Image 1 (cartoon, rainbow, N blue to C red):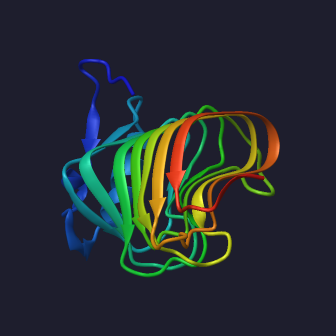
Image 2 (cartoon, rainbow, N blue to C red; image 1 turned 90 degrees about the horizontal axis):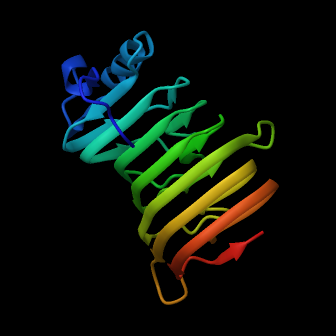
Length: 212
């Protein structure tokens, strides 16, 4: 992720986010994203803190989310947390949850030319990153420098990275651990539909299979 000098970056705290881990910051995050989407410079910054999110957030095409030691903690069990459209970027976030997630991804990619890097996932998240859906094919997705730490969700189909339906996906520099001697998480990386996948430098322990 490269930000040109002089770029206007929206700060979620300017829109009411607290980052204190207990106040619901969903509305403030949505307000900052809406403001960025209405601008020619579509950057949203999350300063260091823990941001509680209580419902799904859709990131419009071209909007980039960047963080400095920011954690997103979810308080809802079903559905995707962030859904990213065309040419979105997301960098520098950690994801945790105060509930056991039973469906949905922390980051769902539905568009083309989306870049994700330096993301961390832990605990009872259901899926860390999902690229594409059964109904929508994503394309030209880049995922790098992702860490899964002590993943504990034991539900069927819970896992790390799910390449559901994508053309030209590149995944590199991924590490992960599940909990327990054999691991509870169903898979580390799962490939379902699409074509042209490049997966490089992956080291996952106690996180099920890497495959289809």
